[in-house]
Amino acid sequence: MQGQEMNSVQSPILKLSNEILSHIFTYVRENRPRPLPYGELRDCDNGLEDTKNARLVCRRFCGASSHLLINTVSVSMASSSLTRLDHISCHPLIAKGVRKVRVVLDFFASEVEEDFNQFLFNQHQQMYHIIPWDYRTDGLRTLSREDADLEAAAKKKIRKFLSTWNKLELINQNNIPNNEDSTSEVGLDDEDRANTLLIGRSYELYRHAYLEQERVRTDGSFVRKIACMIAKMPVARSLCIMDSGMDARPQAVSIARLMNSPNLLIEKFARPMTWIDSQELGIGTQPIELLSQIPLAIHKAGVMLTDVNYQITPVENFSRLFTCDDDLSGLRDAMRQLTDFTFSPGIVPYFAAFINGAEMSYFKKFVEAFTDTDSLQGIAIHVVLSGWDGTITTLTTGSLLSTRTWSQLRRASFGGPLQFEELEKFYAKTQGLVDISLKGVYLASGSWADVLDIMRANSQRGFIYGPSGAECDTVSEEQDISEEQENTVNTVFEGFPSSMAQLYIRNKIPHNPLRALEEMGNQGVA
Image (cartoon, rainbow, N blue to C red; front, side):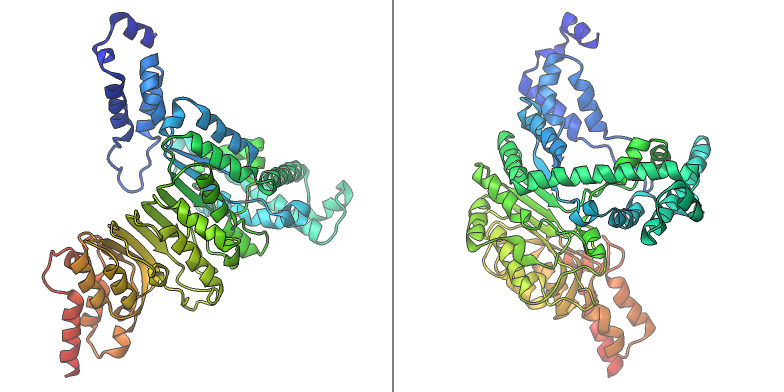
């Protein structure tokens, strides 16, 4: 009705060209409202909702706004996911607006698919990603009054469901026959048996998903289809590969509804395994070979990527990153127009598996293949700070970026171990000011005072967050300073983004705050 009325009276806005209408809708889509106060949640993406509504007004509005509907699309190793990507890539309007393709490489493990006992154990661990802690205990949530009954009922169901799961594990571990007489010994009641049926259906769903995954993975169709579909989307030049779907933990009411929806519950407990889960549990083989196969296939399909972002948990077998030197040459050719490259762990526990030694040479070659281009404008490299035993890894960020110069580089972000000499060499290989962000950097050599000086001289908006090493670790041990002076060390980097370190780097204060501390320490020793 709205569209008919607009067409009948010939609204002045329809006299605008399609190009201007498109610019208007782009502004509506991208003009995000101001952030809400901390802790408050916005119900929806207002720009997206406005775009959806605009498409319903009339055909011209639909044609001028449809390309804004989806700018990022995710795909996983499932036929249904590939089918969705295919539909989007073939849409004459929506395909024109997709800028980024996110490939999610969480996976279903053969050990879990083959053994129900392993499924019980593994997916029991997965519950901690699905069910919030305070639903498994007596913790309280802040809910509106009308949701209190829903929450209470959900808690009761969740605890019963977890109890059933524990009983099933006990039955299978002790080889107790699964019949009504024997299971009564471990206290299975009617509700337990109903839950057992749901768990069994979840296991069958897991097995089906595993077989589907292996079909598209082993015949190469997963990689080929992604490349072909990206080639159909004219502005999809950004690729993000991650090892986890990183689903947000469900809110309280969502959990309550989950427990009242058996089909949804079955699906949740048949979820794939992240690479972190795989390492923690010691099962499954991460598909690390896809990290090179996917961009190589995209280039073979005729697409030159401009942005590549890896959000990948470190693994132990880096030799599987590529099969031969030809792969590295192919990656170099594929990245000739690359402007931004990121390699960063997703959510990494403190015992992440970055290892030392020969394996690291494979990782270094992999990174160098992506960064060996004159077009690069932004680099972000974050390596894990410690190994399995808590020792600092010998792999340093700077060692990955010592092969060439970048005339167009304007921004860089580093995390993990870094030597001051590497930072000096890196700046020497750039032209003009380069804004460097150091996030969670352990300074393996040199001093943070020197780092502040060199960043001030070569950056406009560089910053440091969460530093360690050098003065941050040794000042209280090596210098005889007062408690007040020691606190000064701790506060130099506090108060981000307006810490004394930030103010000095950005030329807001004249003196290096760490140099001043050095002078105070020397005076104290004298």
